[in-house]
Image (cartoon, rainbow, N blue to C red; front, side, top):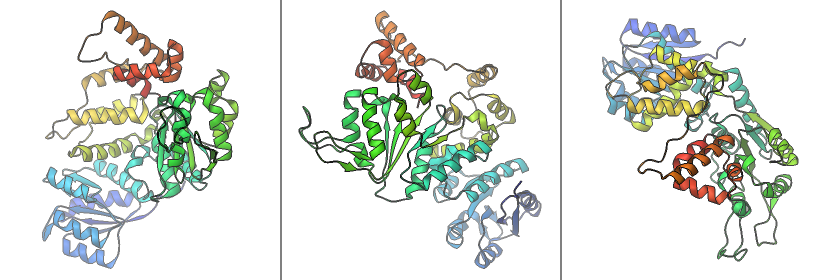
Length: 464
């Protein structure tokens, strides 16, 4: 077992007993602690050496942490800074967070609160390149580390096709974005271009992907750049790859093998120099057996496969993940960070989360919005708490059907059509193209009905 990575920690607080408690917690996590009781001492220490982590009290004998923070950002720009105050002010918290403060904690603060904060700080210190767009991939469990290590390994080979697998809501799009950033950094010419293969009608798939020249077909009155050309020096992300029309899979295979493509109506071959990432929540092997997916395309896609774990497989990351997601949400809604009651944490731990991290984020967002701003504890919907206790005893929880359209009643024929589409989407795991086949209608016809009844997209979106 490896020893925790040491880090330097500066605690600036004039309460000796409180500072001693913080120092003990930091030291137990391999922190090398320096304590200062006022800003002048802290300034002298920072000018003498740099620190990885700084805990700053807001009210000190010779000034306030709020006023000192801009200086601190210049004196020690790489430090992770947390401010602690006994008199919280939302406007201050929002301004400080926008200017780079990592967290804003309030007194009374106990050992558990500070330990939870410190875990998030260490995660940032150990993964400085991890930014908010990968916030739902936070954790330190074995299965998540294996997935992130596989992404890191793949990032070293930009020409390698990567297949992301895993259940709905496990963060495959986030993983693709993280892989893109690790591969190309901040290059302005490296675009990240996503395509949801289930949302493109079969007859438009080729032109959407490869582009078209003026006059290539009726209505093509100008040249149209395809997504491959747009992503030429970056990443093309093919989400829901199993929804690619079977009639177009051979063309996609040729492109993957040669990295060459020809826009519709053009005689010139063009080269693709970027990264190709595909994602699916289905078993490609099962899709091949059912005749829905080409076997040679499956082999071509699975050059480097990264499986994103379900949340229930790394519940040890739950509290850290909750804190990280809440940090993003309070910034989004300019709210104070709430606490979670121990009973609610236990309910979260016992719930299987069929929608994985996406469901967790949605649950926390709904809870935050129903929590009054003057309440310190996150208020969960009682209906969810009751249902979570029931669902937790099931091994395969059933997804709730989408609500009927709001604003008007359906006549009997519309209601029957609505329910038939809903059932077909559920039977096909949200696959729009396959649901259309089951219903005996065209893909475009089903898309028109989804536009008419957007509530049904809740079923199809669960397959993303």
